[in-house]
Length: 532
Image (cartoon, rainbow, N blue to C red):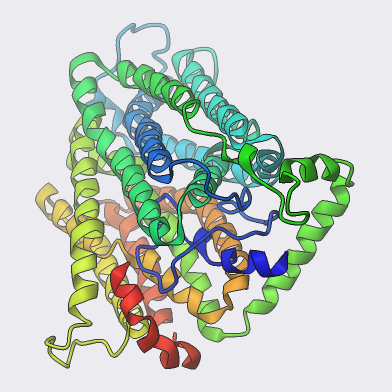
């Protein structure tokens, strides 16, 4: 059995469907055979031989991810506007006295914006914490009862959370807006987006070959990116014509449609043959394992987690792991928080901010699909000037990671400093050029551990990013409140602080060194890297 499993124990879970998905890797990934992982993105990992048409499954999943991720882009700006209106009414004591929405210009006071920022920040942190706690048990359930039922429950839980939040906002004259935080409890049903991400990765890994897998992950990543940062433009159009509620109802329909579409994706887990007996389906093995005490299994995973910490013998690997704490604030700074910041600083209506978000999303797609692949090939060519030519792909990734963080830090600083909207957009474009930072650092991480330990490594990476998600939006909200209090150009303080954080991360990369083993083996992997 061990010999049969060995080819599958690689680093596929280093690739996610979010902005942090690695586009460069020196190993073609496949899904690990370990079935229990203390992870957000790999908790549902289980090897299934390819039975269905892999291309069809990947295409279906790309469509589903594009649809489901667009719900976030559709609902973000309308939710901010409704919450702002509710906080505005409560601040002026106008609940029940005015039927229509209050003029948005009257809601830009510092006290109101502080309340909106912190309400959304705590909601974001609660969502991340609830998803983290629920991911492990629902990940186990996905391995036992199938992926599709768990995805359906996760989508239903997300839908319930949104319904609750919008109910609180609609009845703001009855409930304090802070009650929207209870909507995070919906993530306990199905595990939320964290479990959905892991299941989608598992199904792609089940249905594709090693040669196809890297491209499939990148396609899903781009689909997620287009949904998250492309939908705000549609939301803006709808808000301009019909107000904030229609985009929210469409988001409800989009989530429901995603669940229905998932019914057409084959359940790969049902086609999973066992490998211990050679002929018994592993689903039978699952039935036998149901008699195993849950406490023993949890204890086993905790033991694996402790053993995983022993991988961090390399200082460079520890530094790379620390960089993961800086990626969630960058993500949040370009989503819902950016809409509120743009509206407050430049005096534009919230619905118009969606066009700016979609422009940034389009720039990221261009960077991921055109600019970064071109640069990675160019710096490896023999005709490239020696001053910028990389000796091998590993040093290339390290150099590009340093430059990406530098561009990101400069772009974020310009975003905070820009007194006009064109200057803000210019800063966003620089940020887009550096948006491959997380993919590059993850590619580098895989060099410091053996292939059979990479699943555990990226499980810890996922946990570090969850920690970053918990503090990210409160960090931005606190600096936003302080910046408004100081007045003037200090309103850009959230982005100044984020720029300092990213600069510190970039400094850490100066102390990262490519391991000798990777340097010695780099020439033998160069062709494979170029192909990916």
